[in-house]
Length: 338
Image 1: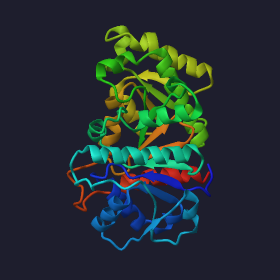
Image 2: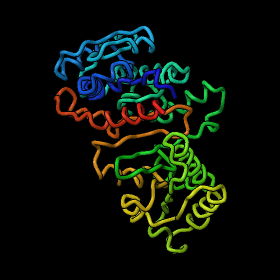
Image 3: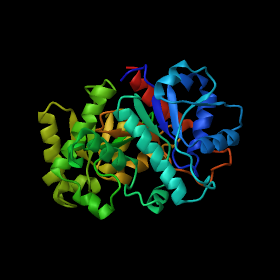
């Protein structure tokens, strides 16, 4: 990635806290005016700036490169086509869902074209996307589809995974937004091995840590207890770990899910591969949302986001904490400068 290209930030759901958190971030970090560009509706960001205290000039741009010449203490903005109406704060609406989707679409394509160095996404509301008729269950699946289309490939040729991390713990998920019954079926040797490979590649190529220690969690209590509580560890997870180790990856396990995250937090491992969504996300979120970062692995660009949702109950109150969004931006900016 190139430090001369800015980071693209999609505004998130305009009825949630995303836009005002973005305004708070630029107020707290005025030096980021030349390094980040917000893709958003102009009226939404005007409201967000007012809600977050005002006195932050918006700087409308025609392209990403114009950001490099901006003065500090402003908010660089690539404006979306204006909405017919400004959606009310704290409410699910199709209008808000369409606007949030448009921001992600525009920002992602800009990164794929090489106009921006990385993508940071403010939170979207899945029910608003559904109300707007958008078929993706979340950011991750949309980014995968846009990337595959841009590359002229099939979806399965662009495997992606979600990594949640903070200062104490990194965890990567084998499956993401699927029902728990379906998530169990996703625990195959091929899926686990692919997850381990994507984890190793991210740590090696993006984070510069080629010798990362990967712990692989089991699916069942006590990692199956030798087959007494399930055979997924024997038939799928252990063979995947063996194949990864044969490829030179320091993968270990399968370990009991109720202790492996504690062991990683204490420094025994660098990252944990979890078998399904809540198994991996509960430990990270329990440690606190303030510094949590969501990273999508497997894309040809870096995408990060805060580790929280739209927080409709806080929208417009001035009480939303920008720390997680700042952590996501710092992660993207750090990678872009390497």
